[in-house]
Length: 437
Image 1 (cartoon, rainbow, N blue to C red):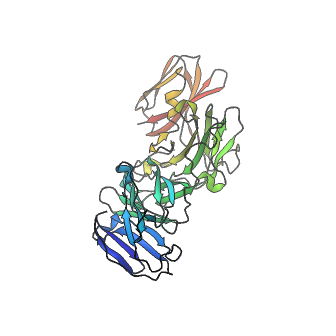
Image 2: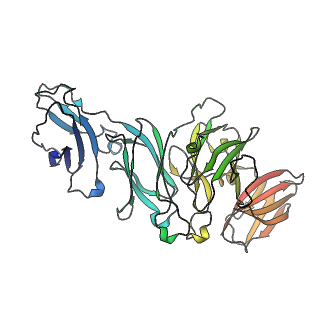
């Protein structure tokens, strides 16, 4: 910090104290607790605000009649300085000895995730209690879990700023956080409401209870999934259900509204065996798992998550519903899709595209994305194919697939479609996602 102020009540201990400087003594009544704030000097632009709150409990620690030296010590960013001593406040009496810590930090571990498909905020800077935790955080990326020092009210101020000019886009003060708890903080919604037909509130949506690994990695059920609904344009709630091979259907998230986490509706992480593929369906089931879709809402989105093949053993992942239901009326933004993020952060991984990379080589579909001619090559016996769109509407049916088959898709609108192949015995064999350019 270039300059630092220590505030206690309305009086400053030190005004714009630079490195190596002293402030001068400030007298206080010893039986009154002093609420102190260390912050970067007013000479620093406000968007570099760094608050550090603590209480000096003078009577309880035997400071009657004392003249003490308060020491600001350590690094503001230890991770960039050989993981040295983090910034903290200490004091020393005239008798000397070890520094005495004024306050024990309370730490919340937070994973910050950019899931807002608004093109005007493709990249943002994220600050938590003044600390830069997401530098140029791009859409469809997340940080790792970052330890954030809570203020004296067990709270964190999350500030979202334009990465190009530093303008503050959102300040969210999140209270009642728990020391050593893990949190997801997902940025969702639309900031530029004039540029989009479908909008949802721009904000940071925080969930307590995130996990850094599966709760019981030694069990057969060692993949755990938390769902977050950040998709824009759906007028209905969404149910997410997963059906594991040789397992009854279980819910991942029921009746999810925009910004919901699955646990908001009394469903926490869903545990699955990483040795099995998980068939996941998203749609409006009217709250009845296994029931038919509502007649006025024809949406059914299915895919498989082959967990073992993509290295998700012992993982706890955040599954994100992202994008627009109808990109064509929303600046051709991100089409609805399903992604997931591990605790290490980084770019979202597509839960649906991963199937094409790892399933049997008996079926090849190319090019994908496709503009005009889609080629399907199979080494197995003949199959029947159908193509349907994201809303579940049938586009092509009764396509005979044998050896090498081509389909002219040039008339289709840009978007995502699904090719379902059924073998000659009428058993559904596989579904491939097709991207039409």
